[in-house]
Image 1: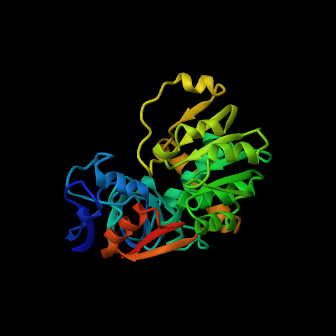
Image 2: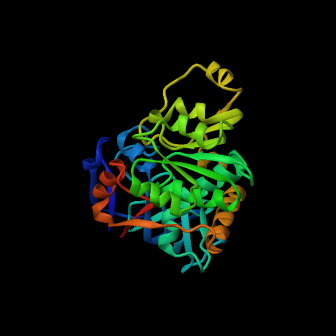
Image 3: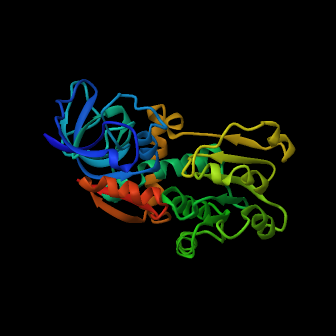
Length: 325
């Protein structure tokens, strides 16, 4: 039996319970790992609240990413061996001291990436990778707006976009968070609680506006985000920390400059194994080179997952949050 954090009914952080569970022997195409670090992400709260339905029913083990060491191989697994250092992003099952994984959705860790780094960046880092390199290919000379620029994905977007040569405008809710975003590469900070961020973007850019807006906030920043885009710009909604964006009149995109809008997910960008490996290797390369750093600003014991969720949902965290089994 191993310790795991499960959801027996949807609701607030209080529904997270620490249980002892049995981890079975790996079946065909599966591996078993002992986890060294586990990532905590906003998507975990969506499953816990029932905003995203659990694909495995109730109860379920929360969590989508982690890193650890292979302890057992199932039949037909040839790409891994016992003792390999690995990391993953898969639907559910992360908040557990040990777990099974589909080998096809697991990647080997380079020696220069720690377990804690990997657990803190697999979901957020590969998300940043597809947002910047696939959804909208950011290049030198682009101006981008990053909402929640001091958050887990935000600090990676700040650094990586700056490395690519973009001008980065970030929004933040406090001076402390603004300082974090600036330290991670943001050129300009807008304090959305006291400033009209669309008006400030217009002022900062001299009326030219942005090529792309990356929005993980949701309801609170829409539709004003569209006013930050130049004609033919792209609005990229990848999260809903403040609640989901409701249905809107698509003609709004026409009136505001023939804009593009998309709601991408990592699941689709990494659906094929070659795409998963491509994103992971691109991430490992940029982090391993030191061009992008992964700040692990909050660590909790696995049994304290409830407190981790409370802090995350209070918007009081910065950078990445991990659990240690």
